[in-house]
Length: 355
Image 1 (cartoon, helix red, strand yellow):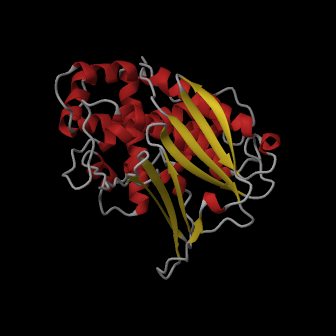
Image 2 (cartoon, rainbow, N blue to C red):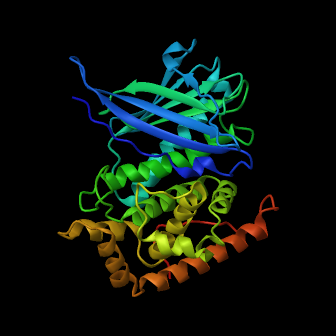
C-alpha cells in the first residue's frame, strides 16, 4: 500500500521572474514500503516553459548515478544531523563547513524564535554540474524518521558554496528556503493549527502559516546578513504588494491548491509576511503560538482572524492597512541603504513584541 503527499516548494526560488521563461518547481515525497524498512522517495522537478508554452525537455538527475558522491555529517544537537551529499572534489576549500554552520544556526534561531523544538534533521544534496539544466527531475530515497527536510542545490564547477561569490541558489536555500521550511516543521507539530490537506476543502489558514514561516526565515536572514534580508524583502515587493486589490481579496482565503498565476502566488507570500510582521510587532511570536496551544479549539482561518482582533484590537482590514504601511517603511529603508556598503541603519525582522 502506498500513500502519496505532494507539496510545492517555496515560490521564493522562482524569483526574479525570467522575461522569456517560466519555471515551475514541484516536489513530492512518496512513501515506499519494503520488507526491511519504510523509506521516502523524494522527487523534485523544475520545469522551464518556453514563450510559446512548450516545456523544455527535463534532464534526469540521479545521485546514485553521479560519480564521486560522498557524505558529510554535521551535528545539529538533540540527536539530529545535517547530512550533505556532494560530488565536489574538495568541498571544504569551497565553504562546506561554513554552509553547514549556517544550517546549524538556523536551527537554533527557529527554535528560539518559535519556542518550539525541531525533531528531525536535514538531508542536503549539493551537486556540481558542468551545465546546470533549465529543466530537470531529481529523485532520492531517504528514511522519513531521520530527515525533516530534503533539498537539492546545483552549483557550477569551481563555484563557492559560501560567501559573496557563492552560488546564488545555494545562498537562497540556506538563508531563506530552509529556515522557511523549518517553520513549517514547527507548525506541523501543533495539532491545534489546522492545515490544508489533499482532497479536502481548504481551512484557510495558509496566510497565517506561510506568514509565520516567512517571518522566521526573514528574521534569520537579517540576523546573518542584513544585505541578504534587503534582497529577499525586495523580491517580496513589500512596499507595493498590498496595493494590489486581488492580493487583499484573496489573502485570507488563500488555499493550498488554487488556480493562481505564479506572480499572484508569490505576492500572497509577501502579503502574508507583512501581516504576520505587523501582528508580531504587537504580540511576541512565542506568546502567540502558546496562546494557540492553550486553547481547546482546532483553529481554522476564521478563528485566526478572530484571534487577531482579540490580541491586537484590529480588524482584518485595519491589519492589512497597518501591514501595508509597514511594507512601505521597509521599502524606504531598502532604498535608502541599498547602495551603501555599511550604513548605520540595519533592517531587521523581529518576532518579539514591539511598542
